[in-house]
Amino acid sequence: MELDILKLLSLLIVFVSLLLAAFLLAMRSKNYLSNVLLAMFLIVSAVDSDSNFLGNYIYPNYPALGLLLSSLVFLKLPFLYLYLVSFIYANFKLKWKHLLHAIPFIIDILVFVPRFYSQDLAGQFAFFEADDAAPRRIIEVQISYILIHSQITVYLVAMFVLVNRYRRLLLENYSNASLLNYKWLFQFLIVFSTTSIMASLKNLFLFFGSEEAFFYSMLITSLIAMSYIIWMVFKTITQPELFRGIDSKLQLVTTMVNDNSLAEKDNLNAKIELPAKFNEKVHLVNDYMTENEPFLDPSLTIYDLAKQITMPVKELSLLINHDLNQHFFDFVNGFRIRKAMEILSDPKRKELTVLEVLYDVGFNSKSSFNTAFKKYTRLTPTEYRKKHTL
Image 1 (cartoon, rainbow, N blue to C red):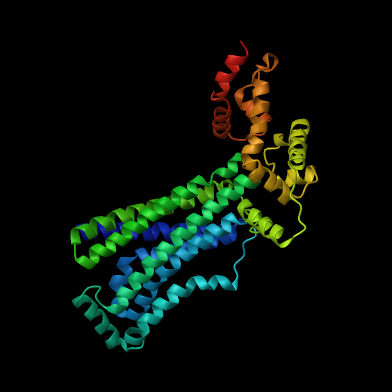
Image 2 (image 1 turned 30 degrees about the horizontal axis):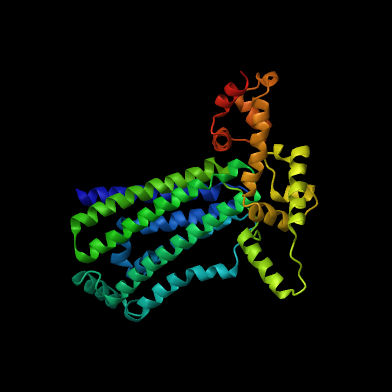
């Protein structure tokens, strides 16, 4: 009965993964490369989950093909990582260097060449018989397991670093609140990490022969895997606006500060900027924001503002994100909230709804407006209006 449940789940995951992969490949969009990479991730996931077809047909008849298909699991995380990169960076293109992600897959194949792939059919069957006699004690299998768990650790860390960098670049360069829905990416990575940890525990149970623990870990892992696959594809298809492709050449302010420090050390004649000069720049930006109200544009970026005030983008970014110790996102929202406070406290404009006000001042999300407004005033927009229009 336990095996029947696992087989049923396995078949369901394979069916859902292949169905969604086919849909992604058939759906033409401006992010088609991302669709292809996600589809490849789903196809490899389907192969990794298909214990029925591999175990009952492929391995008994074509053992070398079965092991090769099992080794495809080493391409699963590279496809997922490249998928995230392709969605985050608008100018992403596949290059020859990305083939380096296939190194663990190649290593795994090479490990099995001497005592498996180089043998005839009888020798390959004898290899598996030895594995059955002493489960997971064969050195090649141990190396394979160590390699896959090392790969999982490295890629999970790399993906968290990637998404965190994306978050920081958005905060430093964009003012559109809808672009900050990167949170679901962190949520996805947490779910994926949980699944990976469960899979690792499953393998430990397999090594130490705890069949009941192995069954329940397989069951939980399968359910989580199916859930996040459906969730991820649903998000990709129904909410493409969750992502805004950014230029891969964008630099974090911390990097620019380090570059400036090095340049100043190399230049013996470099002059230290006087506080008066700094204050002059701050007044220039603040005056422009107050008088011209560029923040009313919900899609305002630091590039747009730099162009309008004829200041180099790098200089403006350092001024706001570093010298003023504010993200560009928060800097712009401060002006939007002050404008909203002005409107909400004006009795002559009390006919305007809160929704109309938030759109008028440059917000395009009610939740982000309420969060920002309460952060600055410690009141909700409705409470602020009641307090200041009595």
